[in-house]
Length: 394
Image (cartoon, rainbow, N blue to C red):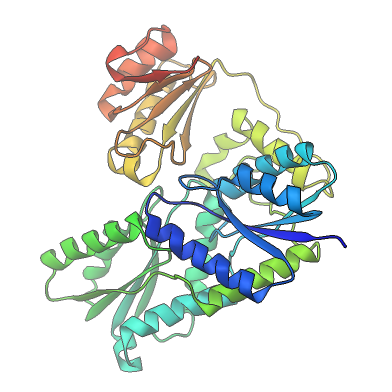
């Protein structure tokens, strides 16, 4: 009899408690769906890896359904998971691999945010005098950021709170610190901060620290932090929906708002380029039902990747990216040398991290003040900036 496996994929964390929360959720799904082989894997920072998870599932099942336990569709879901599936299909041609949707904008997710807010807020009268700041992870993908803002709107609609505003802990704006500072000028009686984060970890700890600093500056405003989403029946409800969609073949990965396919806002230059090669691979593997589309682009001499994750961003990587782009534009080389903001490059605490391809040179501890030197010496003259080198790939 054909056997179906369900592989639930999490992001992964250096904080073991965060991974245990995720695995607890997977255990509950396994208990609710005993007819399926339910396992878990991680995209990064924890084991088993996505590749290892797919291999293990393929050896025991005829069909493998991958469920991304991610809040929104961003880089890992648009890139890492489809490329891993492409490799798995090549290795196991007789196994049927499919991918479900992320948790996304779902009524149960909006209800879960409301439950967490209500637990921390109190009565309806308290809600009317409360400003709610919902804090998302933040992504370099505007599609994911837009879905987060939509979810916050759905949560706040008709709930009776004085204000409900979205913010981000990193990567994009408005940042939480900026948002809560702005809200304080409206003189709310209290502020409730709701972390729209699946599991605990460093981001929640960082948010707690920022709230303490805000409380020291504004002791007359009652500021409280709600619980993160965590393991909850509403979360299982959404995961079950995504599993049933995938089993029924009704869950194609979204593409309409992909920033590498269509111009989006002020980042229209992202269309095409080397990154589009990764997305086109995804389209071929996961969008076989759609008409193919071309990603026309000119060849680039160098491609520079700069980590834009929370840690590096707090150390100046966003300003560094802007400085590199300005320096290239000033000398007319911006079309042949591409600067790309990436997600975590695995060197947290040592950044900002910069990688130059095809040279395979990794720099660390690069400050915005180093932008001109990096452009002048390495990107233009092909001379390594020795004092910043972290490693050279062979």
